[in-house]
Length: 261
Image 1: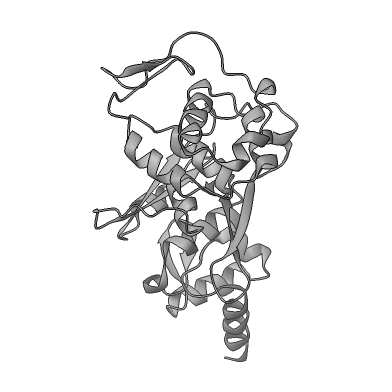
Image 2: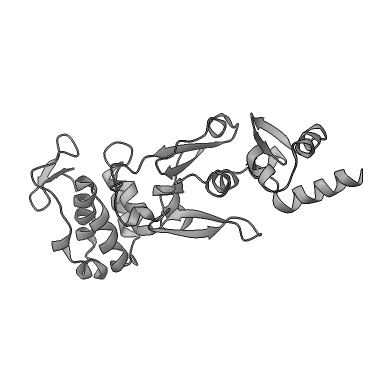
């Protein structure tokens, strides 16, 4: 009995309610296989998939899932795009969907158990392969152009895209899942972007469509930070790009945009 109490205390110290962990992680945190089996039998741990556990499944949140993906499974997935802008108070666009959508960016895949969870949350994973080159100095960093935000009261943090990176991630989806109007509204709120960060990330970005769209939306707002960007070191490619069918060609950036804009 005393051993069980100790194991339970250890579990509660390392694993808050709602945090999803793996068998491997529990072993690495000094819980034996026998202790794990006993914790499952006594319902102190719930098995939600093979080798995947949670303490109190009713406490699972999208934040606890993302924390598990980042800090326990060590994936390269970061909270990005619209979700990252929302978390930083930079999105004023209300979704009409009952289910929250959480946008994750990275090249690792979502585990099957994430998809199968019965939550009012839809996780959408986007690859960054078309946005950033693989073999650069910046890619040696695990999470370039990101910030950290607390998600609970125990100083546990989520990794999310900086505003500069998050907006470029949004632009990847323009004309497919993001409207020009939505992207324009988002840019209207980006009054305090860092010219230094923008310079680096735009030079790093390899997606011509995204870079042209960025400057097109930014030019409409005439922000002070825009004048501090050295455009000569940012390649915008050659030739026209059709982004929206039936649109009007913008002669400066050689992209088709809605005529009403």
